[in-house]
Image (tube, rainbow, N blue to C red; front, side, top):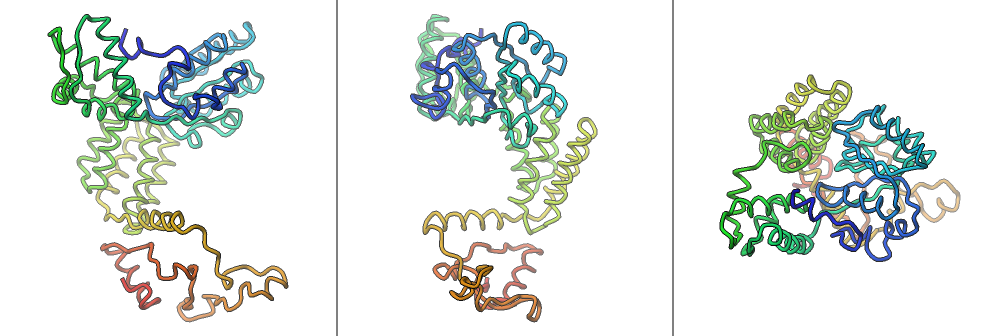
Length: 417
């Protein structure tokens, strides 16, 4: 049995992390102790305890436990579980990667969840607002699980050393932790796998683990692409950074890695929508339009044809001029609000639906832009305290250079970039 399975906790007391959900007095702890839990969606990155938590809940409530994976299960499998649950007066159905179920598969769960025939626990690494249909989402509580902290991962390594020494009769010392922690990325399963692989690769009885040894053994044995999540975030990171770096060849390579690994095409398309705004923005506004259309097309078509649409979009985005000005602008505006609080809207910008509001100056001296030349009237729109603050800085590309010139011609000194 793999180390990760041998160390899987069986009770909340031994569960690592997620104190906001399962710590003393937390929401899930209270529900579990009451014996009355709702159907729920557990949303978080790989290896943070979603499956383990489902098992613990089932054991605590002493309810029959059924587990399905959305990768290789369908409506037929769910109906069989539902029929069994009817005969035994309810059960817990855990569906791993529930975001991979299509609309009709998710619809087949609605009646059983509504009537309490099953208590559904769905696990997903994707935002359920996008991936779970609204009727099912409305019948479930959503709980967010976080990456494990450095201290929590170090605590797990202490347990791993004890377990491996007991099982394999070796004496294990960890001299350097950085490589193990970096490879894990906050994922306990990846941490255990890397640790166990390193221990098994060393033939001596006395083992000293270093960063060099960890990287050597992991790189020698790493999978091409694990569609269950081992390299999920590493590959998408390489893909996004290649597009941001304007390298279409690398972008297509990482795209092909994901496609060959069975990655959800909607996941890829959604990441390109974000990139089109964050990294390209107004340097090429068509990028966002194409990325959004790509997502819609992929959603309709699916594999294998959608790979061509994904490739076209990735190449277009990689070859497009880049700007993160919109991303930086909203970050700057939010930082200003956090620093000085919410400032009042200037009186001249406020609506005046009542006589009293007009009398105290609401809307007074507001200039309606369309009544002026070039549909522009010089006036102040920011609160007086930050009237000279700049959030948007056009970057040096053809499209934003035009924007810069237009702003300068309208505003003169205020937008004198």
